[in-house]
Image 1 (cartoon, helix red, strand yellow):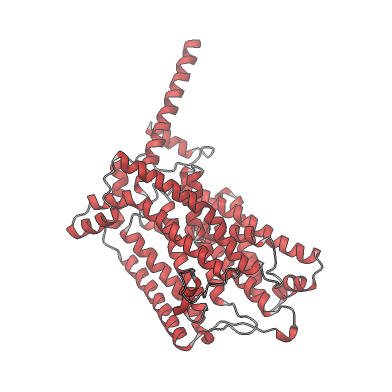
Image 2: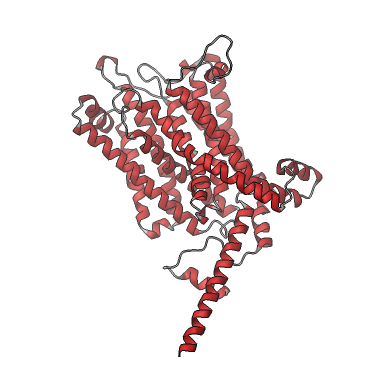
Length: 477
């Protein structure tokens, strides 16, 4: 049986396994919980020190901004939206892969999501936290941010519900809440496993508190499955709605380069594109150093590269349609924005870097060797993230810096405070992600065990069918 499985994995025509066949429940427990109980190595501490240093830049940048006002940023007239909204849209996009992998692939019963969903869900939460900082600071008076929520106001000062920025508040807060609940519900069985294998009273108390009294009874599993499925159903429309609403920040305006009906689907595809790229960027090194190659197999990585290729093609199509409509409509402002300002203007270098990263790079995944090469996919994923940041920069800055009146044109350049806050959010994201890897199983143990059981049953059924066919053939002879 083992020889048959090993031979099957070597056949290039057969799909690669989702879990290494030699594992049982005990070995999966040992493999997937080992990094939680093990003491952090020098590499972890070095990375943690780097991310904490970057997080210090965020504290400095935010403190300086609150003390002096947002005039310390590079925002000017006419570029009123700049690094803050660029980074807001970029972080929200990165947060999309988690919900897509967890919710939509669960509803479509795609088994390959099992080993990677927790990585992606954690990434979603941390990315949305980073995203929320930027519009909060952009208001200039973040201590009045509660005005954006429709709380019962005795003064009758309600939010302007026709403003897309208010829509953002509702979309992001809903998305964060549902994603956090979805992530936590999926964690409960594994938190109970950590509680039961804890070696100290403190560990048992902390993990037991978050495990909510889980005992693994039939009733518990029944309620767990229903809750998980309901949250998946709630999360699925959020994947589409959140970035659609973010795209409305631009699409409902009249600025050239923004006023486009293609923005909602194009933004959603771009969000999934950058989100999957970030999952690859984080998962490849984590998979190696946490010893997870048996459960996060080459097949998982190859499937994610296929999604990156598909969404990259949709993004490329969006670019082509924008340029086509600008030419076909004969609107001189649209034509200037796409063919002159973006392609040859002051930000042409950023534009062509965007094209190289988002249009050319994903097409290497047409080739199987590239889809299965760890170094190639890792470098490509970083390039995609760079390209998607450049896309947000080009969309926002070029349309604002040169709109209708040449007399009101202006050049935007970020200040050290802009860079400090952006790098600081990368530090916040990295710090939270490293803490997640240390204290929580990076792979859903219960789901991998369930998948392993299903695969073994399928293999036994397949072997039994082959044996029956062989007996019939022998009898016929």
